[in-house]
Length: 271
Ligand SMILES: [Zn+2]
Ligand SMILES: [Zn+2]
Image (cartoon, rainbow, N blue to C red; front, side):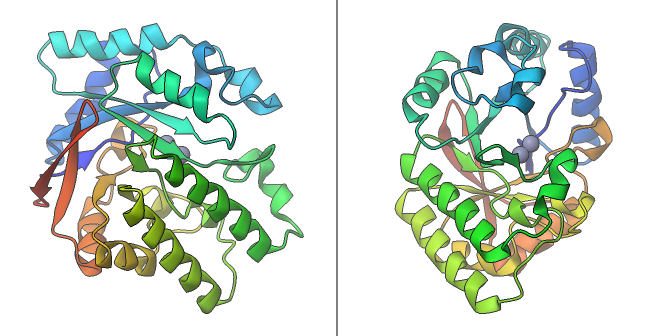
């Protein structure tokens, strides 16, 4: 079994024919469990969950249109899971909880993309990295990620160490390993699932998420995984899965999770 639960169709219309472009690639790459996880900030129903100048400009869509694309595709016989990528913003837990209940999601991805108004993974904000204290920035990011996991609101953790996206990595292995131990303990304690994501291979950092040592620490504590691409184009669905499967195996994994209406089932990872 292979999954690809982290994909975005946002560059096209909410139509089944556009979705089929993604499904075609999933099928060709042997991915049986495919799902869409649009960014929640794009929808007018999420203004109370995340509001900053960048997201405000981009909140132009309707959840109902997105959901109806998924439902229509299912009616036409496609196996496609209904997901969403939700930004975790500390203090917005009540609203997030209600939003998650309001829709029949199969899974909800919890992601941290914002440190205040700093969208650290956005190309247009990349300059804000200049002169930043890397360790303090990592502490802030991993701190918010920890709070996110403590809420237990999300089905899996999106790109757990995406803070390295542009290649800003503190030159201090002990510092990183200390965080990896703390995070993996917290993931286990709060029954989190982490994604193995190939997206970082297509970013300046050129590395998989999460780092081998973080994934290994997760495996040692029996934290389950899903394997995802974070594709924003059909051709990236299941991209670099040979490396993802190898990355998971190297860390000690032989199983992954399949989600149906937030319920987990375990399957062997097979290509
Ligand atoms: Zn993301
Ligand atoms: Zn994403």
